Length: 431
Ligand code: EPZ
Image (cartoon, rainbow, N blue to C red; front, top):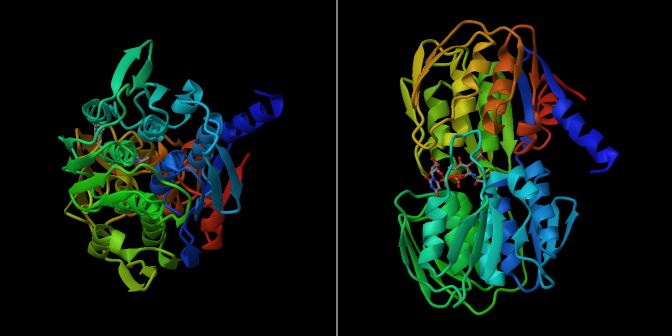
């Protein structure tokens, strides 16, 4: 790594966000493209024997890591503003280097696409991450059922499909988003039909299928719990626009609710946010939806939510849990959050408590006792959404909050500081 990169990397790791809380938010924001859609769609371009243009790609470190993976595989890949242009015709490798696998755990979603295109793949087994072990057993067992041989040695997965990928019926014991995506990517050009039972229903799955179908794939039922993929010989060029990020939208809603004020978010898809909108309405926010815009107005006092549970889609999304919990730290009573998706999603709670939040956690339960006031303090991000929760709480805390390890936030939020400043927050980033 040259010294400039070292300084850049060090800079990101040394940067801090500073928030002087207490200002009401007001104004409008355009919501970025969905991180959790652009990653599998960029992986899918590996299958495409032609140039693909993917629009509405947010500027995020996870997206840049995906671009690095494509380049490393020998694909031609350039960013042109908010579009990424990928031409995989000259793909020459089937190995994803360990450093890139470690940079982004969700790079496991490249596995199905690389095997689908190259007939083999070598990836380092993705370590656990800040959210607990996050195994990939469902991904691997599904790929094995499709004819992939997988050997795990010295922390690497050596995969190949000597007879090619074969369509089959797969029943997921849990509707894993990543496993559903990997199966779709492996099945798109497999021989025969693949049926996924108990598939994930998240909007990002439908976005991936829309991308692939526009390139010539034959995928039916995405968005439901049963998906049919009729393998085709060839998928080619296409142009696609990524759906908006429903979790980023929920984040700015929580910021507005807890700081007070009225904010309009443009370029959202309210139909992807039904459970999110319901939770914010239950907390006393006034939300009006007009086409692809929503306006959130904060209540005088946040109402407690007696019980809120994270569930698979279309239930309340686990990724919106941290920012809603941050909002509920200022509620008029005690709320209970039940985290049903990840084992270890509460690591940021101790950091929230440094701002005066009163939260007790026990396993998957978090009990949030509303307080009248939070007070600024020094804290550090533990993960992507936990970091967003700290920013959310800091907007309403009395005094100054400094937030370290913001590289976590930069994985999923494009210019959160610039966006919040645009909404009148007193927030800055110190390199
Ligand atoms: C995707 O992660 C998202 N990431 C996550 O967003 C999101 O929280 C999650 O889906 C649930 O909606 C991306 O899309 C890049 P899962 P993924 O497979 O695919 C267990 C964010 O903040 N599991 O649905 O990893 C797993 O341990 C991130 O943007 C297995 O046991 O989620 C977890 O408990 C965080 N074996 C649960 O299933 C497997 O093989 C949900 O995982 C796979 C998963």
